[in-house]
Image: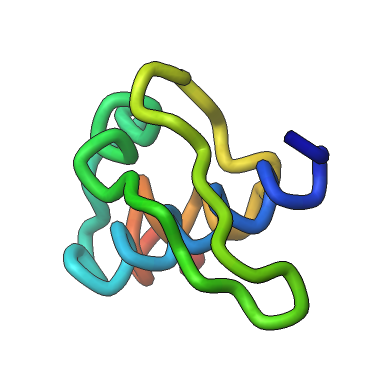
Length: 77
């Protein structure tokens, strides 16, 4: 898998976590575990169908998305 595919999937997972927990997030340092619940193959523009696999642990590789996912909108304040 290419690095860009990996990062795109992690971005989508972080966004989905944020959308489900917009105010308080999913909890500090919990993204790796919570993201597994959001893991699924995704149809990404320009890249087609991309899948990360169910067994991999991952951090979002994006500080802003990590804060949004783990701490919600209040974490930005």
